[in-house]
Image 1: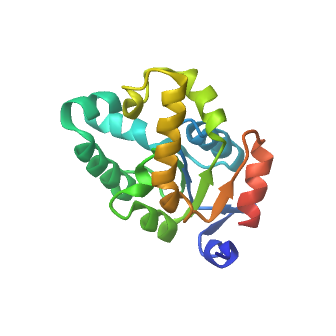
Image 2: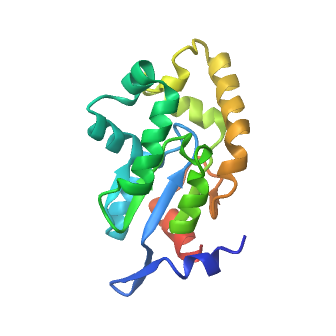
Length: 188
């Protein structure tokens, strides 16, 4: 897809720099969505949000508790509602949940309303990152070994790839700098 024609309608004039009004970061858990939304938000002067944190604030419980008490289907409905109607800003950078693009036409919504970026590090890098914060990923609650984690992540990636690949920008890089991502957005 030629991103330049899509992007021209979503740029706002900010200090004579072209800055997308809505940027959605998507990818697997551990891909760096929250990290990059914060860094990019500061660099571009845009508010940044984490979709899971917004849901937790609205519900008064963690994502893990929502999954345990209400189930994944209820969570996915909350996720879509928050994505489409609950972001507290006109312009923003949003770290989506790993499964967000895969439910209720969320990917089409994000592509229609902003710039989508798929952060796609290797599965090996995802494992390194996820192991730094064990127990925080409800979808991995039953995974006990590194081999099982690798297999689960690979399966999830295969299931989600058809949605992720609809992103306007794909970043296949384990390590990058904020300037690299800013350049990609400028050239998107």
